[in-house]
Every structure is written in structure tokens, then in C-alpha cells.
Amino acid sequence: MTAVLTNPLIDFLFGQYATYAPQDIALEVFGVLLGLASVWYAKQNKIAVYPTGMISTAIFVYLLWKWMLLGDMLINAYYFIMSVYGWFFWIQKKEGELVNPIAKITKTESSLAVLLFLSTLFGVYQLYLAFDMWQSWTAYVDTFTTAIFFVGMWLMARRKIEHWLFWIVGDIISIPLYFYKGLTVTSIQYIIFTLIALQGYRAWKKEYNSQALA
Image 1 (cartoon, one colour):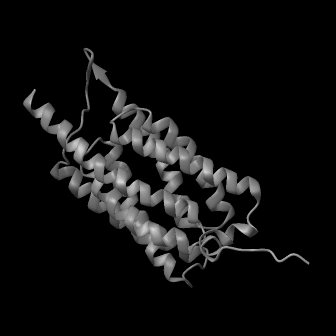
Image 2: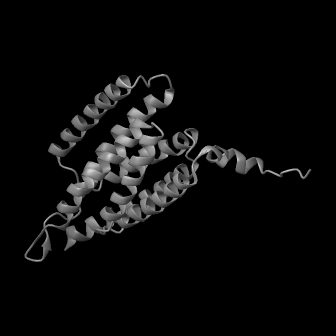
Image 3: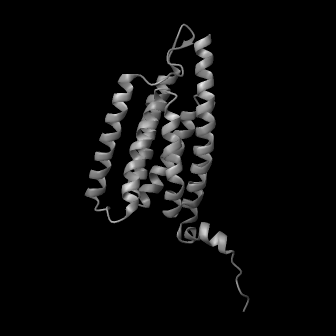
């Protein structure tokens, strides 16, 4: 009988996929690739951020609902809705010029961001309570990251530079969180998200400063 050789590192990183359906693994990989493309387009301040992001989030809404990761599913469903709003907000023009270029957050938007953050914390808490899913520490982290990402996505739709700061914090937290949940490919995605977000923050600040000098 021939012994099956295994790689401990590969087993550690991807062993959980042995129980997943092949089509779900393929969907996750495809969703990750589209998600990476979306964030790259966001860094470039390109409208393609939205169609690529919407397909990616639709895929993850399906997968996360199937795997009962409700907080993560809620994030992606919200992304999809905000992408529709952001797409419309970004393309508005007047006399050939963008109505809503890159800008900094206003005092009113800062207050709304705090309200959105707190409302999201309460909403996700109620959702997890309804499904009796407070047994794991991940539920608490999910609640916090969901609130961070909700604010970040809203600010991105509003084309505010500060949205990158929320992405950076949320992405860093999500790297070990998704690995713990058994979604190694998605965890790797968040490592790349973090790197792109750092570059995106610098790129948007540079473009904003260029606009101010124009």
C-alpha cells in the first residue's frame, strides 16, 4: 500500500477545504479575484470599482449565507447596495466635469459616520442574538469589523479620502479572522487588500492635493 505524502503547511492553511464542495471553492477564488480587481480600481479612482465589486459581493453573499457567517454576509450585502449608490454618485457630471471628485470628510459626514458605526453595532448584535450566535468570540469581532466596513464603504461611495483608513483597520483585523473561520483564500485576499489600501490612501491624497492646486 502506497503512503499518501502530505505537506503539514499546506494542510494547516488549506486542510479545511477538504470538506467544501468544488464549486464553492471555485466561487470563492473567483470572488476573491474580482474583489482584488475592485480594490485596485478603487486605488486608481476608476468607476470599474463598482461592477467588479458588485459581482464579487454577490458571490460572497451566497457563500457566506450558505456557511452561516451572517455578519460577513451582511457586510457584502451592504457593499452591493452601497455600490449602486456609489456608482451613481461617482459618475455625476456637470458641463463635462465631475460633480463629486475626491474630497475630505466634512463635519456633518463625521457625525453621520459615528451614527452609522453605532447603528451597525446595534444591528449586528440584534442579528446574532436572533440566530443565537454569541457562543464564539468571533461574533464580537464580526460585529466590530462590520461597523468599520459599513462606515468605510459609505465614505468610499461618497469619494472621501478617509475611507481608506477604515479599510486598512478592517482588513488587518480580517486577515486572522477569516483564516480562523476556515477561509484561507479570503484571508490571503485581505493581506493584499491591506497593501493596496495603503497605496490607495497615498494615491488619493496625492490626487486631492493636485485638485487643490488646479
